[in-house]
Image (cartoon, rainbow, N blue to C red; front, side, top):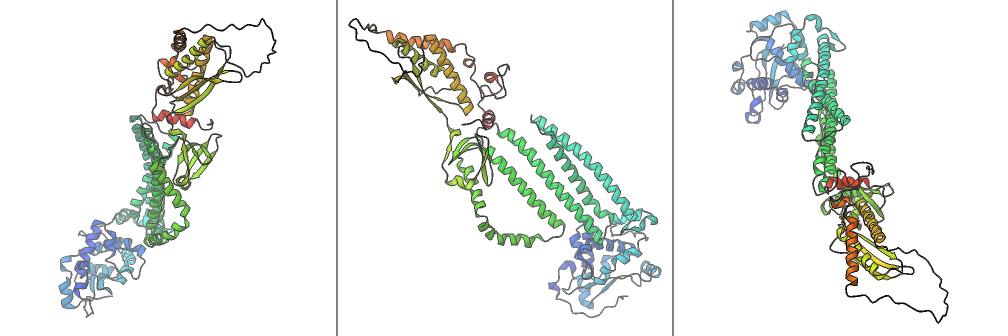
Length: 601
């Protein structure tokens, strides 16, 4: 057993030793302060761990503090300071058992084999609890288990308080754990399950209240999964925080703490992943109301970036919780980044291609585009590629790197959609009716809700093989193809009504064979020469007829909205009176554009 005698020793110069460890007094005060503040890494620095595993260091520091508290009061003012160490050339200091301390002598008589508590400087000159003392802490703790804590500065940890609470019959070990530890583990598991169900209910109810306040809906199944992950996360954190109170040691502590850390990290990643989807859905409801489509592209990319960050953070934190040193790994990744850049050249090109798409905005989600030989509706813009839904409903993936060099024809950005056709009428149509019909068609173009009013052409344009040809050249200011087709139908139907009202017949492609008979009695009766007002009256007739045709149509009251594919003529909300009627917001435009997939272009 070590005595209190002092012997000369070769010590490091005082200025080379940190003040917190330059004497038994300084080391003891550092140890006590660290225990009180639960600064376990600093408390461990007071121990010479050369003969034990560093994984047991925190547990050993707690037990050493408890054992010192049971041996009696320690007056740190009486411990040697730096001046006294230098003056007496101390190389060791016996903290327990002292010959002049009654409590120490009583314990020594009761436990003859009780280990000593000694401080000594290590190779660097730091005064620490010696390696032999640290190695004997489990034996010291076991001998003093039934001794009472002496009032003083020593702090009794929770596991020591729990252990002292149970009778001696609960101190028997079973498979490496004592009975009271098995009981505590069972109680903690039950409490964790109760906390799990409580958190699930609270998160689900709170999320529903928030969504209802902002008039937003949420998928019940998705919310249930997210709430479940949140409950498991809180339960895992509860176990992780209280696992130290059960006094696990060595391999058992490493297994229990590592399992709880991995479980907490896993459910945290899952919970964050699922809640990111809920938040993305909620934010998308707001971005749908904005006029620009940039936020619709950025939101999915931001959601993916957040998920990648969540996974990376989870992996790093999980590795650190298992005492893996991730610093060399991160350094190796930095060095290998150059090689990865060359190996992943195409991937990087695609990434910068997606950045180019976001900056230049040649198209957005929902636009009808033609990229080289790929034509369809843009469905999604990702980090690596852009997905285009063709009009025959297949899905084509276009690498974003190709978009930098490709010619992109964005039909979705058209403000006007051209309509050019020829109206062929019979050759025997009187010219007044021709003029009336032409002017009536012009009036239809001028009055229809989606036609361009500042540029159009309707003229008797030529003589066809079997018809008098009237050119109709106009533009529709339609947001999508479905509205364009509907408005073409509306205009063509009104042209048919106009022709029927004016008595104008459309010509069929026919061939007529005339047999010429040379007859002296054959005479030609020319039409009367038109008067000055003939053409004006014919045009007025066309305008009045077109106006009469349109005056009772529903679109004159309210401009039609987007096409509602689910409506039928028996529904009150059919086409012209649907919920998007008169609404040109981005939400309605997007709805119509997405529903066009597979419709053809």
